[in-house]
Length: 124
Length: 124
Length: 124
Length: 124
Image (cartoon, rainbow over all chains, first blue to last red):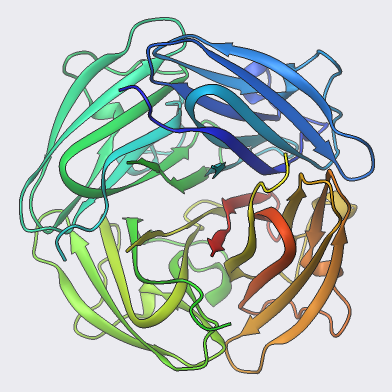
């Protein structure tokens, strides 16, 4: 199963809604990069966040163990800086071994939640 | 129509909501891998499920007849083990003949259902 | 702008909800193949629909003029047979000139509508 | 980070809902092309909009600075003409340097908003 995926991915759409309804972490509005490392070596992942009106921030560093998935919430990224809410951004996700990245958002600003998801763009 | 698709696919985002509203199977929260086998030979499909904190489980074995589609609900997978609810996972889907895989979820935890879908990533 | 797109596309996920809320065609639950023909020659498009338990039906024939888009609702396909509601299906979309195909669904079975969309899979 | 992405993209599905609920720009029904220019040179982007029953309109011209993202709302495009509401369209997005494009829509016609998103198709 080694070699599945790519080492560079882009999520051009990024936006963490600043408000939520419902209770608990499950229903908190969030934006996620779902990462699969199906290979046999730990993936060292670096996320860079791009904005419309300021310099990029990052890299945020995330490790995904061999044969594991990690659903990274942008809400949880803290170092070097939290990702601002209600702000347009994009992200570039780079890894030292092949991974697969899918983007999703849960938006619970209104009473009924809304979802979106797409496979990310894989640059070569 | 032979040869349409790929033999290895990845759905990096996986999550079966543990609750549902509405009545009947149609409105039960579920996660689906929609598989098309447009070719003239039966597809023997093997699904492996990856988690964040334990070893992968599988393969789940599914057959898709020639010139048929099968919308596989992860909720229904039982052997070797049910897929846990409210748990992050990813899946790798392999076939002995080319297939096409699309991912979708219906989330009815709240009164109004939410949907997401994306073409899966096709590894070579 | 000639040559943009591919001549064979697959939408593996297909399902027309049999019920709707809201009024008018805009809010009727529907499934759509959005087709762009950016080229300078009319596209002759053939859609084949695959099921889980019976032989494929088609081809449905659709023409998309040069430099035009057509958002084809599966609900509207009649010849050779209507597409059944509340039924899993997949579709293969073939064209004599390059086109681009995106899949979307509006589901208004419950009071609040739900949407999904994804670029289709382009076979070579 | 130069060279990430492609120079020609297609969003085959386009539709700006003519009505909205909720208050403020955030909840206005809108359709967006999220563009990332991760490179070190400004991107000169040209958007052409295709319709079902009339000639294409454009190009709309947008600049995305180096190392910036721009989430372009089709609602905001004015020159050479506003994009009509409640109308099917498609768009082709061309750039003089590589970019990545993701499509999303927020539909707030009903009380609970709905979302969709997909990576656009990248023509070569």
